[in-house]
Amino acid sequence: MVLKLYGNPHSTCTQRVRTVLEELSVPYELVVIELQKGEHKSPEFVAIQPFGQVPYIDDDGFKLFESRAIARYLALKNGGVGKIIPDPKNLQKFALFEQGASIEQSNFDPSVSALAFENVFKPLLGQKTDPATVEKHKTTLAGKLAGYEALLSRQKYIGGDELTIVDIFHLPYGALLKVQGIDLLESDKYPNVKRWWAELTSRPSWKKVSGQ
Image 1 (tube, rainbow, N blue to C red):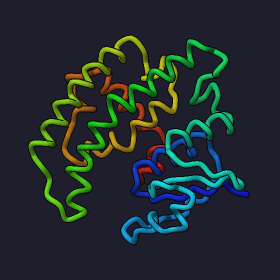
Image 2: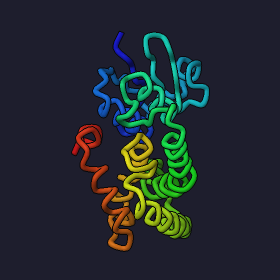
Image 3: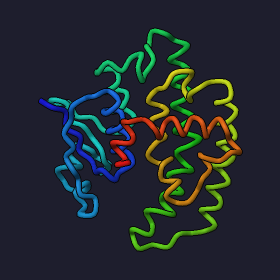
């Protein structure tokens, strides 16, 4: 049975999983969940994903939600070890990978997701953007990217010297910064971040998922 991905093509977390699937060349069926119709809050959906969020996968009866957990599962199952995830037996490489995973979730995601909520999602919901909140998160993100710049000056990627799913995790929300007119990831102020981001966004997997 082909793997089924229950999500929405415009959902950042769905895009995260789809990019990993494309990196691994795993056949899958995208089962579109219409968010505007509230299908992710239906009893049938919540019975599997109790938080009512997309996406989740159905891999021949095995159901899993949370995009980062799904990505790890897919990489470990589908030949991603040594390609987009380190071999867990190499403790130091895997520790650097886990460090990078923590960096993305703790130091990148909070600011970029908050900015997307203010500048992208609030208008879609008919709500007003709060300029003060936007400036606060932009300032926070700039400070975090200074840390990224320092890290990327001594290693090629966030999880070490090899590309991993940790780098891919940054793509959906990072790409929304450009939509908002925020050029921090492409700024000459952070040349190593700029180099890293240009490489990530040029990957065929992301181009396909993002429709570039």
